[in-house]
Image (tube, rainbow, N blue to C red; front, side, top):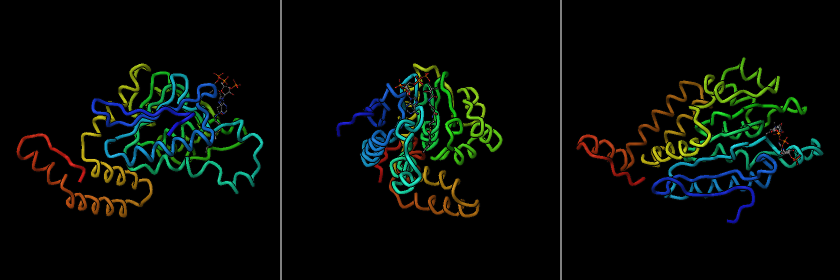
Amino acid sequence: PAYKHILIEKKGEVGNVGLITLNRPKALNALCDALMQEVQQALEDFDSDPSIGAIVLTGSEKAFAAGADIKDMQNKGFIDCFGGNFLSTSWDSVSKVKKPTIAAVNGYALGGGCEVAMMCDIILAGEKAKFGQPEIIIGTIPGAGGTQRLVKAIGKSRAMQMCLTGDMITAQQANAWGLVSSVHPPDQLLDEAIRLGEKISQHSKVIVAMCKESVNNSFELPLSEGLHFEKRLFHCTFATKDRREGMTAFVEKRKPNFTDS
Ligand code: HXC
């Protein structure tokens, strides 16, 4: 499909990493409805493309995304939001992808931008990245996980402080607090994210999806249920050819040849 606000590419040596670049530079990648609908479509396409093993989401050097589109929201009323289920379906789709998603954040990840990054499975940051939940400054609150996922990522005191002050944190702080996995020079960040995507893509796609689902369940389930679910999925891996291939390859001292089956 022809997109207006995003760019789509296949990256990596064998083209197995899907790349989505938010591309609305004049608005610092503010996440208007049309942009998020395009992101949803691109994610669904990569998710169902058998050649893709991981998906990278990025923005520009200046901004990953400066939030939901404030100009779109300015004149909305409660009924518009509630009735239209504002910021729901397309936003939620980011966390529903089965394949691993990696956010490569250079520049601002604010409000909805920080929330979309947190919907991804892994966040890598450029040295100049800034994260924040500034909604409070414009008279609202985070609406797509900023009061929930952020707490789980960095703990209550730090999340509370960020949400209540609206202050931004640096990439270095985000790294120290565990919001991101690592920090890189801005011009190397995207390559680093793609390399990570390639590494994940070497593994069996079906097993990778099970692993992702199980880790994500740790956020939803009490420990005993989460452990039970994990055990059952572990058992399920024994229903695949790739589990047998992986262990046989180890025993035969060779590389596995996964068939995603
Ligand atoms: C619409 C935005 C925008 C946004 C920036 N722009 N952020 N437009 N929605 N969230 C536009 C500006 O209006 C401006 O357009 C252009 O992008 C460049 O921005 P400047 O402010 O001139 O750039 P700069 O001075 O470098 O400042 C960068 C900035 C600042 C610090 C990131 O733009 C800023 O504070 N933005 C808002 C951040 C924010 O509050 N985000 C949370 C939104 S609420 P013009 O046309 O004037 O040149 C949210 C709710 C989440 O996300 C709910 C989730 C479901």
